[in-house]
Length: 95
Image (spheres, one colour):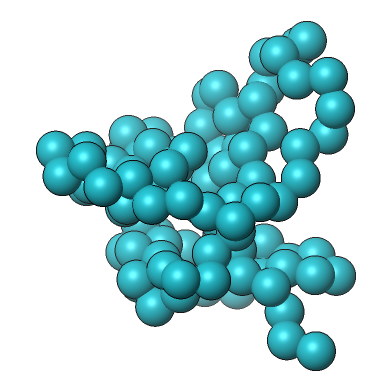
């Protein structure tokens, strides 16, 4: 499978901005009591952070992340793993 890069993530976000969903799972124990669920992604309009957030609230890219393809029964997207959390930015599958 092709390696996923920040540029792939940028294109995915730009092409699907109005239909994005996000799920954030923190890697610290006891930070969240329930398994996170997907929710509609909100725009982050702060221009000075745009290169890091790609305009998606909850997403913050520093340069040390690992990107991978994500697929479930309901969603397709990109998974972003760093030392603190896993963020999945996805769209709902058709049908």
